[in-house]
Image (tube, rainbow, N blue to C red; front, side, top):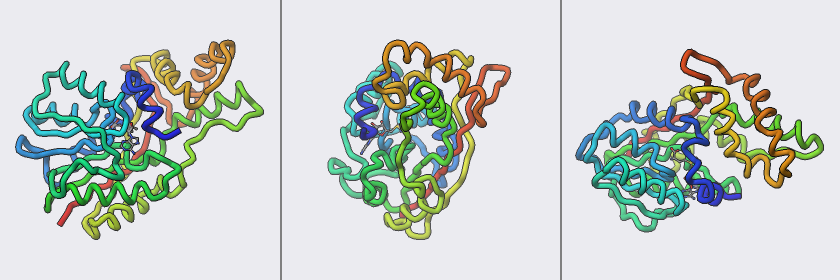
Length: 275
Ligand SMILES: C[S@@+](CC[C@H](N)C(=O)[O-])C[C@H]1O[C@@H](n2cnc3c(N)ncnc32)[C@H](O)[C@@H]1O
C-alpha cells in the first residue's frame, strides 16, 4: 500500500496515530535551520500531511507564507480545517507528489521542509532521489531544505510482536524499505546528488511518542490496525489492545514519566543549503 493511500483513508486519525512522534522531530529540525524562518520567508511544507510542520512555524511567525503540499487530498482537507480553526493567513494547499512538484515554479521558496515524506513509497527506489532534485529546484539560491527520516521508530517491533502472538503462523506486516533508507549516509548522498553537493549536514536526534497514559498510547497504536492487523476477525481485534499493551510496555524504547508514558524514537535530520 502506498503511503498516501493509507494516509488518505486515515487522515482524520493521523495526529493521534503519531502520538507526537513526528512533531517531536519537526520541532528540533526547525531549531537547526541555518537560515531561520522569519515573517518574510516563504515555506513549502512538503508532504505536509495534517500540517504538523506548519503548526510549529505558524506559532513562531503568524503571517508567514506557506504552501502545504501532499499527494493525499484527505490529508489536505484536515490541513485546511486546521488552518481555518487556527485562523492561519497566507496559507495555500496543493495536491503534489514530492517526486514531481509540477505546480511549483523554479526558485520559489526560502525553505522546503519534508518531515517524514521523503521516501513514502517503498516500491519506488528512484523516489527519494527525484524528491531531493525537486526540493533543490523549487528553492531560491541561498534557500534551505530540511529532510527528516526515521532511524529507529521502536513502536513497530511491538506491533509486529502483537501480530505474531495473534497470528503465529503469518509473516507480520513490515515496512519493506531498503535498509539504507534508514542510514544517515544515504540521506546525505540523496541530498548531495539532488544538487546540494557539499552543503549538506546530517544530525541524529532523539524524540518520540508521548501520551498522558498507557491506555491512550494503546488506543493511538490501534489506529495502525489497517496496516498491521488487516483482515483480523472481530474476536482477534478485541484481543489487540491487551496484547499491544503488553508488547509496547516491555519494548526497549518505552518509558514512564510523571506526565504519562513515551516511546523513544530516533531520526536523521538532513539540512541542505542551495548555493
Ligand atoms: C508520515 S506522513 C508525514 C506528514 C507530516 N509531514 C508530518 O510531519 O507528520 C507522510 C505524508 O506523506 C504523504 N505522501 C505519501 N506519498 C507522497 C508523495 N509521493 N508525494 C507527496 N506526499 C506523499 C502522505 O499522504 C502523508 O501525509
